[in-house]
Image (tube, one colour):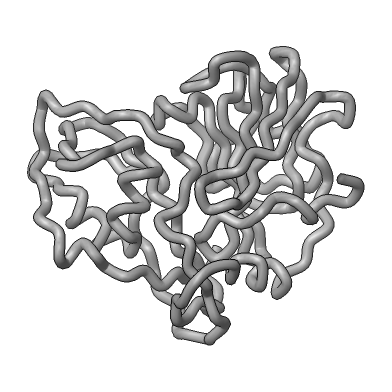
Length: 246
């Protein structure tokens, strides 16, 4: 995964302390924080010391976590179904997208559609994450970026789309259910949510086509489903056009 430049709006927003009785409200977890264009530049890598599953401790505020983890607070809130005043509960777990190791291709942000240009900088030819016979649909978020929703029978295998390392595998994030996140060497991260059973562990190396989970209905899924999402340099990008035969 690669470095992400975030506008720290958190410096201008009053933070809210941990509330032991607080609760999160639902929103589309896969939405991004903005629709801005991204122009290629090269910058010195930064390091995100936050884990994918950040556990809240007494005294934590969302703005402080966002600053520490180098992510926009609004995006962090959307990913975790939080709405103002962003009350947190000690022991609660937040999903934190990672800043990676490679030089950044992200620079000034002025408008829309720059994510497509990013994809052109790192072409891929992935395998399909489920058997061809499984029904699927491309899903649009509010920014017009596509993920994939598959509707399989429970227990069908879920495949890694490319070689990579398991950056996260677990169920600490209840909205996502049993979740796998793979980090790939070319700056991409792939996300596989709502699984029934996970077949990999954090840190494990996988090859394209390896089974990483069995499909199911967990988290917020209303029926058996696999939700698949792609991120490049920390931002969600369109899943269309990344696969060999689809």
